[in-house]
Structure formats: structure tokens, C-alpha cells
Image (tube, rainbow, N blue to C red; front, side, top):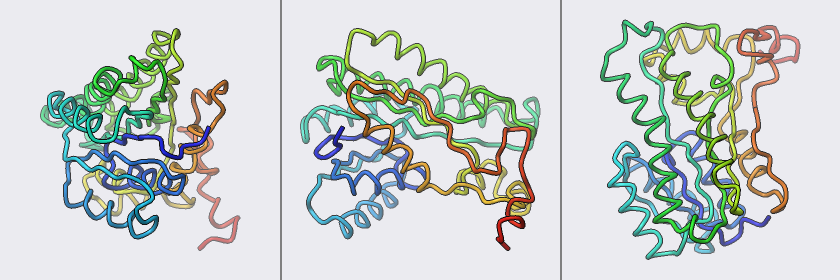
Amino acid sequence: MSLKGENVLITGASMGIGAAIAKRLAQEQANLILFARSGDKLKNLSKEVRDEVGTSIQILTTVVDVREYSQLDAAVKNVVETVGPIDVLINNAGLALGAPAAFPDLNIEDIITMTSTNINGMMFATYTVLNAGKMKERKRGTILNITSVTGLEVPPFPGEAVYHSSKAAQEAFTNVLRTELQDTNIKVLALRPGVVDTHFHQQRVGYDEKMNEDFMSGYEPLVSEDIADAAVFMLSQKERVSVKAMDIVPTAQRSLQVFDRGWKERNGHQ
């Protein structure tokens, strides 16, 4: 399926994986609808994309907190009035806070922020795109949820009970929604990254550089562009084909329990 001219909404679009997906989709000539909490970062991203692809696509940016349904709904209605119905939703907004603190040692505010963003935010965005975004009415489109391999398997490191539980909830929501939309041509897909070297991983360990370096020692993690390539692959399939779920991990990440920390040395990386 060609993505040229498709209206693609990305949540959490201002940096990391979201920004990389936006840039990659611009190469496919998709129209970009970019939601995030940082207006400055969205503005910079929009300029970067414009510098690369010119005026061949439409780019709309809106400051939105996915935890606030009223903001999302108003933003989606404005999008429809401006560029038309939404063809693709990429639920990318998410965060992890508080590691390596165990669950009872977390701040309750961090628990609320994580569940509100990772679970409510995904459901809110999906709900308004299906309704205000006209996807349900048209009975066509694609919903791509950026989940995580941790939604299926318990990792070996402590302190992320809330994050991993929310990723499991995203997986369940994806599977149920796919079934509920069976009488439409709406695809519901899950893309599950493993370890990706982004601001996200630094945030989850409280910007502890040593902890972040130790976590990624001995192997080469993914980068945001790897996830963007995978997303475009999933979105570009023929109408009759759904890559309904894809795990994309560093080769050295054999499972969540096993990391090949001799990978760099064996493959000539210093």
C-alpha cells in the first residue's frame, strides 16, 4: 500500500522514535499530523522535515497532552476540518519513570503519570481517531501501536512494574480492538521494540548516565531509525496483508533475560 497522500497522526512525535517515524514517513510522501507536549520541539521537527522534502506534503503540529481527552478530541476535529479524515494513527506516546525503584517505593505521581500516558493516552487517541477522525465511519485505516517486547516477557531488571504492566495492557487492547473491528477494513497492529538508544531510556533511569551505559554495555542497541523503518514496512503492506505484530530488537538481545554482551567485541566494535 502506498503511503503517499495518507494523513498520518503520530502521538509523542517531537523526539526519539516518534520524530524518526515522522521523518521516514515524509520520505514516503505521507501528510504528517504531529502531536506532542513540546511546541518548540514540534516546530523544530517540522522545519527539519520541510528542509528535506519541501512543500510536497502537509504538516500539522499541535501541542497535546494525550492524558487529556478533551485536548485530543479538539485537536483531531481540527485536523479533519483542515486536511480531512485520518488514515493512519501511530500511538507512540509513552514513558517510564522511577527505575530502579521497586513498585512500593515509587512516587504515586509517577504511577499516575505512567498509567495515564501509556494506557489512557493510547485509548483516548484511538477513540477520538475512530470517531472524530472518521476512521470508524469510513471503515478503513490503520492503527499502529508502539508497544514493547516487555509487554510479553518479564525483564531481568527491577523497578518497572508499572511500565511493563502498561505495555501488557497495550498488547491486550491491541488484540481486542483488532477483533472488535472485524467488520471493517481497519488494521490494528503492534510494533514491539527492544532496547533502543534514545532519551526514553535515559529518562527511565532518572538520567543516571552510568546506569544507562551499564545497561547497554557490550552490544549495539537499536536506534530510532530502525523502528521507523519497521513501522513503514508494516504500514506499506497490501490491503489483504497484515503484519499484525512485529518484534524488533538488537541482535544481541536474545531475550529479555539474555543479552549477548560480547557482541561488540566479536563483531569488531570498540
